[in-house]
Image (cartoon, rainbow, N blue to C red; front, side):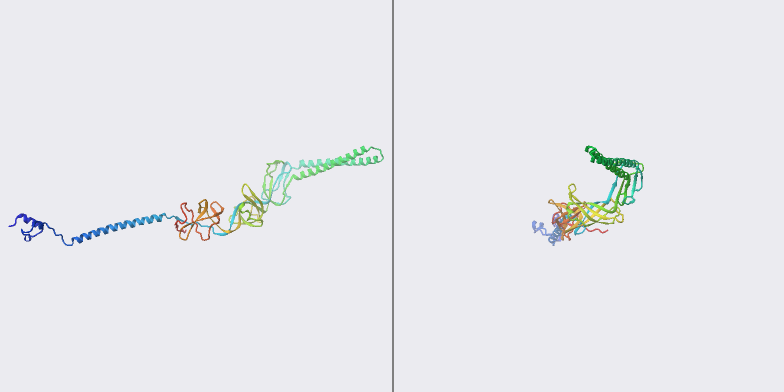
Length: 410
């Protein structure tokens, strides 16, 4: 009968009692383990799955890293926008400030001292040449004229008596009744009296002129633009700081004075036309003709004074007005006006950044013809097809790739 030890071993080995080994089997045979079928293939499959999971994870990380790298590189490409130019054309307009002045303007001062009795014309009134503007008290000057006339009458009478005496002396001298010295003395008396008469006549003329100066009249046809005198005012001559009593301006034609920079002065010649505007009439343009140039450069401003003539038949323009005068200048080179923000400075020269066909930057040197402050006019360096970048960063170099900002539509 088998012992209990052998029965428990058989049970642990999963053998039925009827399958227990006979006592003839060795101990090594009893301890030998036979694995189940397909276990090897199951292990290989599990390892393959694990490798696949690892490979998928690594691939996902590589893709994510590449995506981040691409995004970072994309964000590093600057986004730019283009400027709007005023257009490329041959020639440009030179706009300069000007001063409008009356064709003739006369400040009128008193030429004799006295008290103003009355004035007749106020500001804004059209006047004719010789029209009475004011009257200074003429009493003193009438008296002076009367006195000069009296002196003239007296001296003319003395001259007449001296001439009669000279005739008598000449007769006596012919009879040797008087000496030649007496005759010469009488001749000198006649000459002296004649001189007094001439002086008296000059005094009468001067008194008459001064009396006429008590009437202040207009020197030419025009408009009264100022009046600084009133009844009872005392006016004195010879005062350099005195205010003019009246100002008369001929406004039928106007002069415009413009200071043209030396670089443009050769292109502005007599007979050329220009347009100008004044603040009084926004949106309206007037025409003027270049009459003359000073022909000299002012050393302080580096400009040449140019005079233009404008018709003012409608009496719309006013002397003393500020004007913006526009000259049309012809140039063989293409010019364009663009914002000053489009300029960049490279290697000590002025340039603009141009967007090429492949969205890569081209740095193009340019020459500024005129600086208007917020805008500049370029004399050369551009082509009609150029797309100019606004506010190019200093880090932008030739050949750099950029993105063009989308256009916004209102």
